[in-house]
Image (cartoon, rainbow, N blue to C red; front, side, top):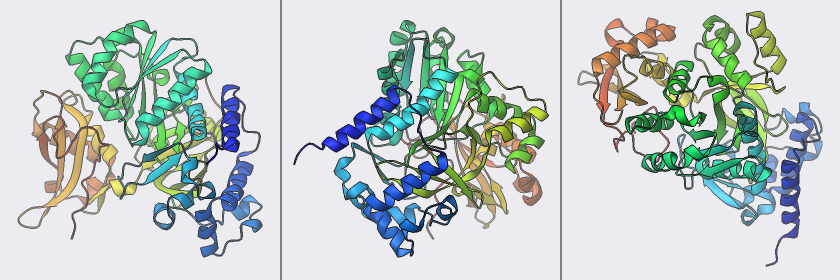
Length: 489
């Protein structure tokens, strides 16, 4: 076995592009076509995948041809072809590291990647730290609160933020993971030495850290805290709530959510522009319904179509992206859509929106999440984000963490009931009747299906309160699921 010099040169070239901020030289459409041709030529599994569907890769020359390519998903691709064959030249050992998906939609999936994949995603982190947090001119402590281990969030985030430091940003990273006690131990020691602190983690966990820190006497307002979220949709009320608790005066420039996935890292990021537009649409629900076609408010991010080429089909998202396992027209099953930069900006401006100074010329993708995370109750779809709004009501938000599990259960008479199991904040007590009322009232206000389909006598949910980090419903160290797994029949 000899050292692979070709691979080394490819990595060195990627570092040069990243450090010199060299943009990709081709159009988004050409980048997608080039990746398709390279994948068809070098990835054994994709060659077999195309051959099984009668596709001749040499005849795919235009975007019209590209749009007729078969969709790739876990069932048709990852579960059919061995892992090495999904890598270039069938060489798994050419990948530097593997991550494992959360398994929220089924069996966990292994995702190999290389350092060049990290550099692609590091550009998205750079966008957040530079444009939202002004980190080029401020000494910054980045605290990685995503779980560490085989999951993608912690190690990938740590690597990408360190690449920013290597590029010259005054950023120092500490990675306690989702160990709350360790986070609260290192923060008071390190934070005073920096001009700002960035906490990066899943939304409900960061709120738990913030609340626990307050209980321990941490003065968050002393640290100029910024927040990076990923993995879940949240409301603007929730953003305001956590911003207030850390003493943040400008959530537009102090928070950013990432649209990320184990499949391909970060696909898009909130920007000051996208946050400002989302907050504007939250205050104008009729316009939001016109834009998104739904009463729910999705995550709204901007993306670089040269590195993540998005399409839509039947209200769900597809993307094409390079990686240790290259993905071409990959159906991730997220509900959402695409909007052009100028199209959305003009529409909002016509209704009184004033754009912030930072307006990157990038298109928008909006994401509701996956329909498998809903439950059906009397024919009405109950969405986690609608229930979340009830948990954010001032009358209950101080004694719940924001984590819950929704399920539909049968009583002894085989009647269906909506059950919500809620996690109490540390050392807190709560009133299940008060929470039931706020959730019911919120659902009635946000969901016409709930208001019209569910009988009045069944609209009040059954609330069960569980202690903080209850091992059955809210175990620490794993990504939370807001709906109960289906009961085997």
